Image (cartoon, rainbow, N blue to C red; front, side):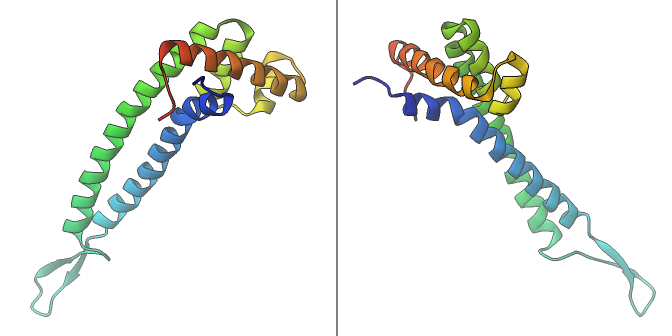
Length: 148
């Protein structure tokens, strides 16, 4: 069974999705770091310094942060592998179609940005994108690369 244009698009968009997931996890890591750093010093009745942690507890925040950072590292490795696969497809497609695919699926540019960079109308950019996806689907099918 041949790879459809939709399946090719899904496979090519994997890097974008992974990139957005990494961004989201990095924001969560920043939030956890903030919680871990909210240890506040207060004086007890006898004058000794006590350390209280913010909401969620310092230890829990540190453990969650460590786990999240490991997930981010794993996701970055997955992103690198996905981009290598996309780069191979883009290189095989080549020409203006390859450039368009690179802008869209490696640089994550919008169609408007691509149209400006390539000096095309937005409509022509969409038309070329459809043609480029057909070529990408053929390349991916020949190489055995399938949407996952």
